[in-house]
Length: 113
Image (cartoon, rainbow, N blue to C red):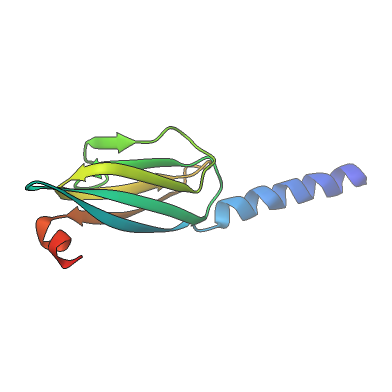
């Protein structure tokens, strides 16, 4: 009887992990060096199962991978010196659940900060 209860609990834990929605926040901090505009993008995962892989893709989900982290147990990751352009921030967790958002790095946005 104990074996069956343990099996049911393990299955419930796996289902609960897959049903969670990964949540995150990000902050863009602009750098100004001479006339070039770059930014650091700090990503904080608030709900998800480590290990995470953080991607920065050109334009959209099918775009070229510009930057990528190694899988990490850390909930915070920063992309440094990202040049002007339109990017897709993509985060993938241990169970291949994906979250993402479009980020635009531009001189106009830098001037607002």
